[in-house]
Amino acid sequence: MTGPVLAARAVSKAYGPRQVLSGVDLEVGAGEVVGIRGPSGTGKSTLLRLLAAVERPDSGEVEFAGRPAWVKRRRRVPRPGFVMPVFQHPRASLDPRWPIWRTVGEPMLRAPDRRDRARDLLDRVGLPGIDLDARPTELSGGQCQRVAIARALAAEPAVVLADEPTSALDVTTAAGVLHLLRSVADGGTAIVLVSHDGAVLDVLADRVLRLADRSLAVEPTGAGKLVENPVAATEARLHSR
Ligand SMILES: Nc1ncnc2c1ncn2[C@@H]1O[C@H](COP(=O)(O)OP(=O)(O)OP(=O)(O)O)[C@@H](O)[C@H]1O
Image (cartoon, rainbow, N blue to C red; front, top):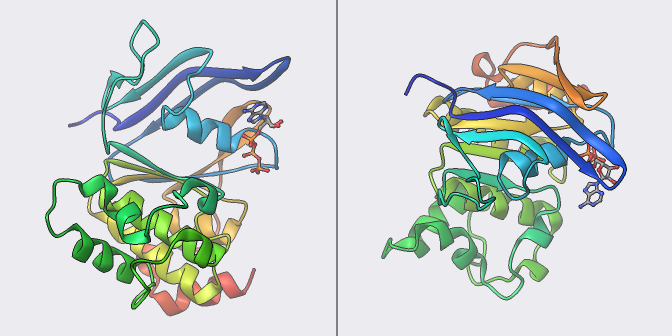
C-alpha cells in the first residue's frame, strides 16, 4: 500500500471541561518510527489510546490503512492485531491470572507451537530463561514491560504504539529493546513511540513531534539515529543523558 498505515485526521478529545487534544493530524507510514514528546499531562497517552482505537475521539477520524477505525454507529471496526499498544503501566495491562507464555501467545491463538514462539519472543526482548509459567505479580516492572513488548510483537502488527517502553529498564537492556524495535520497523512495522527521554527518541525515531497546546508540531532531532549505531553506541548515548 502507498498511503499511511495509520492516520489521525483533525482528532479532538476532551475530558469534561478539559480540552486535551484539538484538531490533531498525524500520518505514519509503514516502517516509520515517529517519536512523540511533550510535557507531562499534555495528552500523549490520550493520543496513543485514540490511535489504538481503545477510546473514540470526540471529533475527527482515526484511520487504519486508509479505513476508519470506527464506523458511523460508533462501533470499533474489528482489526485484530493490526495495531498493538504497549501501555505505560505494563503490569496493569497484563492479566494477573495468566502465565506469561499465555499472555505473549494470546495474539497467536491458532499457532500450535505458541508456547515455543512465546519463549522465542521473550528471548528477543531480553528475558532468556525466564519461567514461562510465572505470573505478572512475580515479575519486576521492567520484566512486565518486556512481556508487554513481546505480546505486542507476537501479533506481527502493522503498527506498534509504545508508551515509555523502556522507562523501567536499565541502560543496557533498554539499548537492546530499542534495537529490537528498530529491526521490527525495518521489517515494515510502523511505530509510534512516546517518551520523555530525548536520547531514546533521538536514537530510534525517524522524526519527532512535540505535543503542546493540544496539537502536534515538528521537533528537530538531535543525535544520530540507531540505524547507524551499534548497540554499544546506543548504550553510551543513553548513559550520557
Ligand atoms: N480517562 C480520563 N478521564 C479524565 N481525564 C483524563 C483521562 N485520561 C487523561 N485525562 C487527563 O487528560 C490530560 C492528559 O493526560 P495524558 O495521560 O494523556 O497526558 P500525558 O502527556 O501522557 O502525561 P504523562 O507524560 O504524565 O504520562 C491530563 O490532564 C489527564 O488528567
